[in-house]
Length: 113
Length: 112
Image (cartoon, rainbow over all chains, first blue to last red; front, side):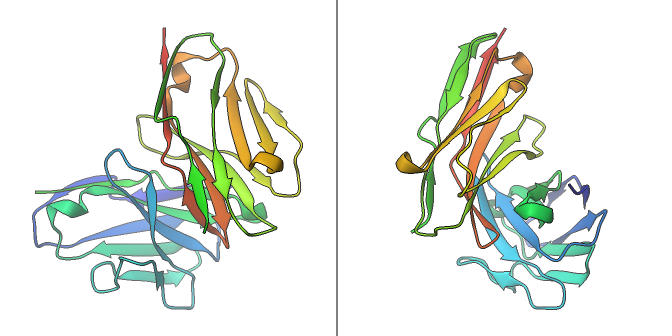
């Protein structure tokens, strides 16, 4: 398994500002993902962030809005840029460890006012 | 197309009852993985089980059991003797090249 921490755990931000979410893993992992979970909904994959390569974004998500960094095998950041109330969600990072098991961080609850 | 369907939006049972959460999936892959996750009110996602497509044996872990049937493309989850702490949203997911395709989730309410 893997132990994943995220910072901040929650935040309330004003429209038009940006927030950077950090994801730290207790072991080196190659594959890391960022998800969004809107209120009462299932999870939607934002992007895959593998170390040493550019993040790969899913349809509907763009780098200008959700820039991602992956400087090493234990850390990644997701920035939510120029926020609007529609960005209010839980943002989760996840990692794939041995045997295809995917573990999730505790999530960052973002409210945009 | 890859798809996961959890038709039960919400289930409410009284404590100690058994409850089964349904999951039906669609994929053209011959090798794939299926998952169940639990999301309690606190919001974290708790990994419950991973099953690969070549292993159709049912699995039991304490009060939890899983029934995988390739013939019907189903991977159902049963909680025996449910407890209030089992109250959560449960997600079924299909792994497609490490990317999880999620069902809509089933909200399980266990009443004391």
